[in-house]
Length: 432
Image 1: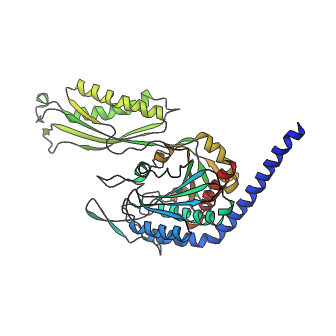
Image 2: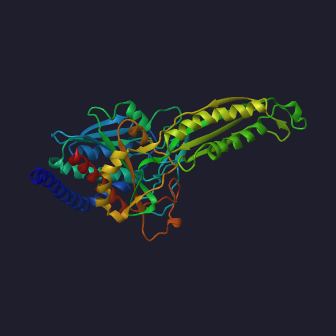
Image 3: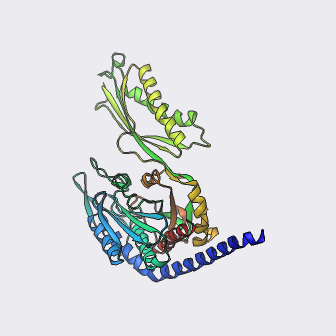
């Protein structure tokens, strides 16, 4: 028994030494290139572009990747950039993803590198800002690409660096984002085995990693309900089939799907009606009312239930009011759940702890916001993580939220992200 155990012990010891050596080297390189990462971030922040319009952003990223000597493909899903690092040795192919697009938000920060850019959205001129941290995501992945390229001799397998456009959603009438990348085969040639992604967070302390097993961010399912009645004078409502009264009952009825049909301790979900359109005068009951909303779910069971329950509830209420309805579910593009693979999360947790220190790795509550990284996770096991961007001396309540004009994350938060992307890649390669 002792003789049989010796090779395993030696193997484990060798693996631990190898991990310690590579981790130390990653730390050293991350320190050396931190100023470059910050410079890249400032440039990208100063020059944001809207979804599917990341032309100059793509050129900037492409130039960096070609200077590293990588095999580069451009024009993926319109403006995406993909680069492959091939170690020349057998091993897994690991995908690393960063999103590229800015938002139609006018920046209100007093930064030397603030955005003064404008773009076009639905035919109108609009200010543009990296109000969700995608500039830092690109800079962190550019940094990881530099480190991993320098460590090519220590790699086993391939790394696919995926710079994705249109995470915030393609313009009306266009395809885009992760869904289009998958459709165009970004996870093929070579076949990606696993994929990792990061999101910086303005309300999480610099130096902190947040993670969650399973459903980490919600599925998004937009819906539209058109309630059709019979128009009448507001003074004679008995001559109408009132779609406004019907819509009020529908809105209240939809809330009972979550509060009375789902096990809330297991199946947290949200149904929100965000837009109501109907009528044009106080004394006319209109012919129809349109409701537009969104559904957010964190597990497939709850999502499936709401897909069944929403039309059941709406149709029953409409019938009781003598109205007719048209239901679109989903209404346009929808996103799956950002679902972290259980086995992959468990396997990579030691990497998170070693990279940030165990006390700085926090098991997170799920988020009802969404991420189209989920389209990659539908195809291959994936792990999506958050890294802190809030200065530690700023109270959480004072930290500006994402998608706001005041949004800000500190440059110092990016070094952890660079190290994490590199360590996830190296550790997965060494263990597979």
